[in-house]
Image 1 (cartoon, protein in one colour):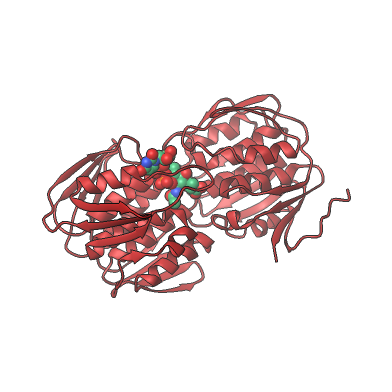
Image 2: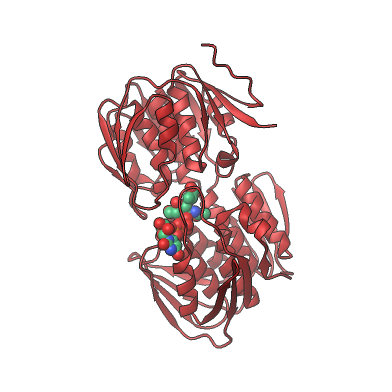
Amino acid sequence: MEETIVIKGGNRLEGEIHLQGSKNSSLPVLAATVLVDGVSVIHNCPDLTDVTAAVKILEHLGCKVTREGDTLTVDSRFVTGNSIPDSLMREMRSSIVFLGSVLGRTGQARLSSPGGCEIGLRPIDLHISSLKAMGVVIDESRGYVSCTKDKVRRDTVISLSFPSVGATENIILAGALGRGRTVILNAAREPEIRDLADFLNSCGCRVELTNQGTVIIDAVEKAHGTRHRIIPDRIVALTYLSAVAVSGGDVLITNTDTDDYRTVLPFFQRAGCEIADSKKQIRIKMNRRPRALDDIRTMPYPGFPTDAQAALMAVACFAKGTSVIVENIFEGRFKHVGELVRMGAKIKLEGRVALIDGVETLYGTRVECPDLRAGAALVVAGLAARGVTTVCSLKHIDRGYENIEACLKRVGADIERVQNAESKMQN
Ligand code: EPZ
């Protein structure tokens, strides 16, 4: 039976949201537990379908995983496998991050090639070329990537042509155990990379991040068990800030770390939001129609995060004036535009550029989530739309948002998750 989220728009949002842990940190950290000859206790790990998919892969590899609330305990003393079948890889595209850790622990890895996804082709050429530079023998054929780590490690310097998050993570994971030094130039600087390094260093590994986007990994013999707390989810925080920006209100977000998205806050302030940023908490007040968002250009960290582009576009749809959004990271990341236009938004696309002429009102209707962040943007738009919005294909949203409807309901949204919604479109 299909679940849908049904929103009756127009409520102001008031109250407190306790932010979930980061999906994009949980996944590489869970992959990194494969390197650990011991038990890893991971706190603040969100309950998401992507995390469930990662746990299935860990169990397939021989790890024992238990969950108690937001704490996952991973016993990876007996890693028996080094291959991940298509069925498990297809559940979550970013499973490619297991390549480095399976290889690092067992010396071999055989993964089904991750396909593209809704937002783009998602090639892994930087992952492959980097691992080859580290001396890994790789065969890519018949939809599988098979890797063997050579015995004698030599020191390696890898200069990434693009600061790929996943490639940076895979290089770190593949170089953490064994012998030799791996240096990554032009590495990704996202907070999730820092969190992965913190986890590995707490296991006795040696991963150093410099301010110039260089990562230095000195391989160690063994990684021991540890306790680690996943950083808060910066993209979910920006999604909830967008919800207040369109609905109006006064919301406090706790369990956050505004250092991870401080460069984005000026966009909310220029739109007319009042922001009180005290690092671990952030309070947003909004009592007017948003002003237009001047030129958002998505960039690698610390630039504007591509994952927040859809939510801020939802804000732009209601704004007074014309907003410009340029999506520089993924070629398929405007899938929310079609659905927003169906709600009455005025958006023109020219390649990677979106021109949004803000309107006073969007109108509720039935909308389909095309992908994770687009789905969240449709929820944001539904909160301020006139009438009822029914959001379908929730499997995308559930990959990255823990109880999005419960969080928003708690601050006053008229929102519920229903089974097989009878359309409430009469008004
Ligand atoms: C991570 O994806 C995140 N996913 C994405 O979040 C996020 O949008 C992205 O980083 C950018 O910040 C996870 O952490 C699980 P990339 P990743 O490698 O690692 C090109 C979400 O919504 N590229 O930095 O796949 C690629 O095509 C998700 O939570 C190559 O060309 O991102 C893209 O244009 C979506 N070759 C750009 O780099 C490669 O080998 C950024 O990709 C690798 C990447």
